[in-house]
Structures are given as C-alpha cells and as structure tokens.
Length: 246
Image 1 (cartoon, rainbow, N blue to C red):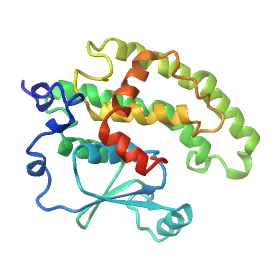
Image 2 (image 1 turned 60 degrees about the horizontal axis):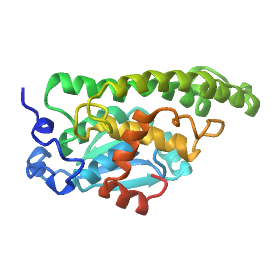
Image 3 (image 1 turned 120 degrees about the vertical axis):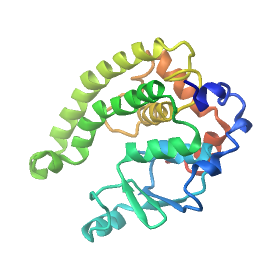
C-alpha cells in the first residue's frame, strides 16, 4: 500500500517539500481555533503540526481564571481543554484533535499499519500522563484536595520520577531503537508520534514538572534523537521563538 509518507521520505530534511494538496485535505474554507492554556501541555504537538502543515488557526490561550469561568459556564463539551473549533463545531480530546490535524498536515500515515504504529506511540504516552495528571487534579481521581497536601504530592511525584517514568522510558527507548531510521518514531518521515514524543521530552528537560529529574532522558538516545529531529525543524524553531512556553 502506498502512503503519502512513503512517497515523501525526506520531509524532515527538505522542509519546502510539504504536500501541495494540503488545502484540498482541509474542510473547505474551514476556520480553526485551538483553545488551551498559555503553555505546551496537551496542545504543543497540535500547534506544531498546524505550523508545519501551514494550517492557519487562531491560537487562543486562556489564563487559569478565564478557564475556570468558562468551565463553570459549561463552555467545554467534556469540561476540559484543549478543544478545537472547526467553524462552529467544537471537538474535544487532545489525541483526536492531534490525529485530525495530523491528517490535514500530512503527518499521519494513510497506510493502516503505519497509522497503527503511530497511534501506539501517541497513546503510550498516556501511561505516564495519567499519574502526573493525578498530582494536578486529585479530585478527578476521587481524592479530596484537603487530603492531597504538598507532602503527599511530593511523595507521588517521587514515585513517578523513580519508577513510572524510568520504566516507561526504558520500554519506549527499546521500541524506538528498533526503527531503522534514527530520529523518527515510525518509518523515515515525520509524524505526529514524533511531535508527541518531542513535547514530552521537552517538558521533562525544561523542568516544567516539579519533582521530576530533568535528566531522565539522558540515557535514552533514541528518544533524544527524535527530540533533536523535531527541534531542528525551521517551523518548530520559529514557533518556539515566538512562544517559548509552547
């Protein structure tokens, strides 16, 4: 089976070779608005995919008070962000949004097996995401905020740092090392799996999460190679220069 990616193996090194039919892959004259906070979090990879795919969008960044007010007013379908507005329709769930934008930008394989492998990486990142989310929103996991004090938060973060992330990174590193082309999660072309991995490595390396060691990826060369591939894209460098928080 032929895929757009297999026909364009050098997208990462010749950035002017983006597909000429990007416009035809988008909903006719659709207007896009991505709503999230003024940080990378669960939106960075989608923002980067839009930038790389030359998809025009409104990048709405909410303050936490603004989010709280909008959430209380029921403005978000599932009560959380990010959301993507496609004209007047609201789409939730960061992974669904990322896949959609990936398809529009040529960063998601048309071949089912290749797509499955990309999905595997994207979804795998939910393994460390869940316990980290717990430390931010314990109430959503049935733990009263009063019982989850700073001491308990530090204890859980230490467990994530000492066990959850090292075990996950070891598994992911072994998986990525099997890919024949270094610097990519799947195959030899840029996909949303690379953007997702980049976002996570960047968050850890930057010290965004208190209590998590910035050097966790130092012994994961395949993960760092993916990070480097994405970081060196001109579109990514330009975006992060304008938006250092992500």
